[in-house]
Length: 443
Length: 161
Image (cartoon, rainbow over all chains, first blue to last red; front, side):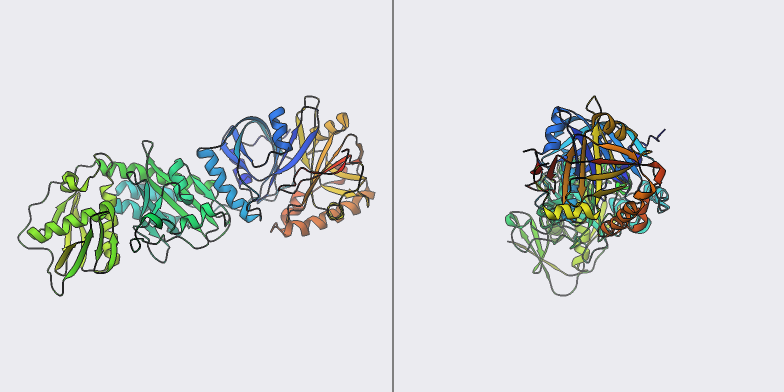
């Protein structure tokens, strides 16, 4: 009697580290056996195989849907057989995109760039899974403490009263608790259909403010398809590499691009959408310099963290804003020294401090409003509420991501220097700190 | 089989590389297992595969009853692959006389798989056998196909054209 493993237990066999083998049979009873690039876990009852060529296997499964797959566990040498039945082929959507990204990594890893191209995801029902008797070596012990790290993260997110706290909790968990030191969080700008970095760790530059198009690279595909996307080997597939590295430029004017901070040669990448009520809020992304750093279990962990983060972002969004505080007599900042030029380009709300590009878009419009108000009235205290009510900022009524934009602005100003800052002073309140006189220029 | 296999493919098969074996039952359901060892004659016309009975009950039953075989030989590091097919096969228990073939195959596979960074310990776990559990399946291929991934994959190399 052979053991009946669950598909979930076999996910480690589906990383493509050891190629799987597929047996099919044509209508005349001629069997066929072939290697498979990819067997993909769909759910407890289904797997998907990559359809790359119109070959004998393909013709066979269309004529006779029964097939058998051999899987080998990459760390134990344990062998498993899946008895499967072909159901359908998907050539777009989440499953297809996840397989396409994974295949790009597998193809590069195995020297098959340009040979492997995903034409479709063939979905099969798993009728029976069996462990083949053998002498596998014991599984090396798993790194401990992941659940504890998840708990710490969930608690820290639940305690957070600001987006900044929640993001810090997430990045601290990834880098310290889960040994994923290279990570970033991007927020979705629904109007522009772009993603912008609001927080990162483990990079030479923070990259806060850098943008990607939805659909661009591993991160953009995860956002577009609302599904985790994982690559386990360095890929030279253009769609997942160069596309990610600052190729946004054409429609943007030069000098207003913040470089994407990511690793130059990532071997492993995992992007998970941050969703709430089915809406895309952003993407949580980790990467690393080695092959096979992120498996299905790391994906489980990241999806869980992203779920907590998504819920927190939504809750922080609906928390009531404070009323604007009556300006107090003593200004919070003392202005001295030569004037700092703040130049505004109305076409895209881009702002330059001196000669240096700072920010554009909604965040740029917000800062421009603040410095103009400051110039005309001397005000330094502001509230989220008045920004939401300002028609000139054109914030959408629901899910305006105002917190994220203020955080982005705050961080960009911090990175720029100390002359102009934004500081939180309470829920829904913040202060503009101006150390030098400002000279406002409308370009 | 008419014609001979291209020399580089035959050399690969004779050296000892990954071997996977399929057959099917009367209802055309495929059966499948990795061979524990293989031996290929100089001219490629006589092939013996060693299958573990404990791992291959359905496959051995299908080969015995239908004679149908599809076998893929593949070099792990290069994906150079060839599939051969047969219509009939003889089965017999493995004997002490087969031991040198089995050991030579394991030694070759340790080298082959080390080239794709699979440690020898894992290779030995994967190819662990007991002589009294092994069945030798001998056949003459009647067709051979190139199965290296790419444009030529599936091309008939030799056989009933």
